[in-house]
Image (tube, rainbow, N blue to C red; front, top):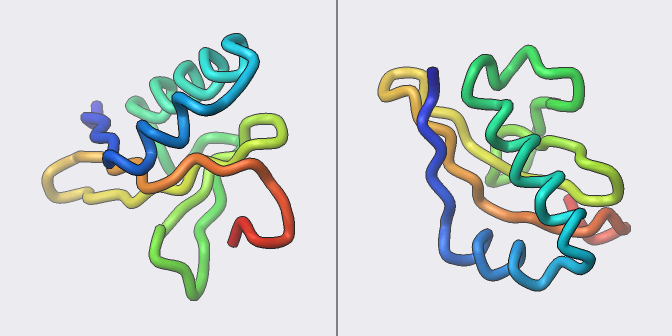
Length: 86
């Protein structure tokens, strides 16, 4: 079981997302990562990006890093998918 840590930037971005049901869907998807983050269906490893992985939740992308030694997931950013997301 992994712990989940949110950066200040990710929390700020999450608060701006409307409607509230979209925010709750993102929170549920991130909470589901705690069991097995790399084998989830919508998780992909990123190359050439600060964040190591991305989670797809509808039109939004959750960018996160994974530390297997300490078993912590650090959510870096939550962004709406567009040409500037990655």
